[in-house]
Amino acid sequence: MVRIASIAALVCFTVAAPGWCEGATSPRDKTNNKFFAMVGEFVPVESGFDGRAALAITYSWAHASRYATVEYTRSTSTQTIQAQQLGVTDQAFTAIAGVRQWQGKWYYGGGAGISTLRRDIPGAYGTVASSDTHFAWELLVGAPFGGRGLAEVKYIDAGAGAARGFAAFVGVTY
Image 1 (spheres, rainbow, N blue to C red):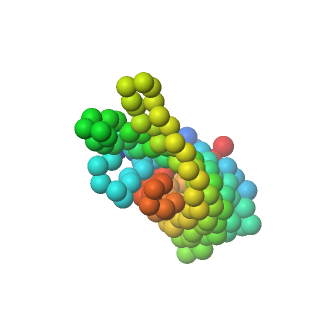
Image 2 (cartoon, helix red, strand yellow):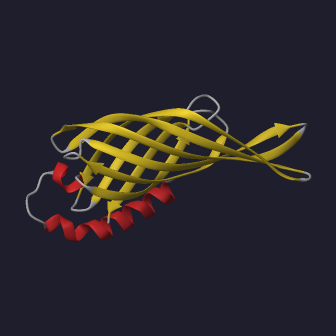
Image 3 (spheres, rainbow, N blue to C red):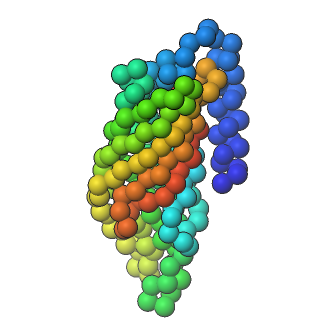
């Protein structure tokens, strides 16, 4: 977790540093009509998971009060299936549209959409994969920083058998 966050912060600060000297535009204006590529850490709420990763691409519009995002989250766990310890991988793609409420230099908000979870279970004769699609929602808090950076913390919930947990993202506009 620390390694991914450190790398993301270093890349983000390196790219965003020239923007710190830009004119005095509001943080809201810096995120309006922009795409943000984001990397982060996903922490499922169920116990026994490890090996977490998160990626997202987010677009903001309507004076940065509206957003749409596509998120990829991945987590692994060790489960006992028919008396064997197996490494199970869960990968979710989640598409969400939502609304932000700005409070000066930061915002909070939420949105709804759909999430498709793919679960891969290795077996003696190959990998067994299953896939389900669920209604998803999220709550978030975030803030732009520098000239081109954005940081967000989210709670993502797509139901008990799908992606459910916390994600922290750091991103940069392009």
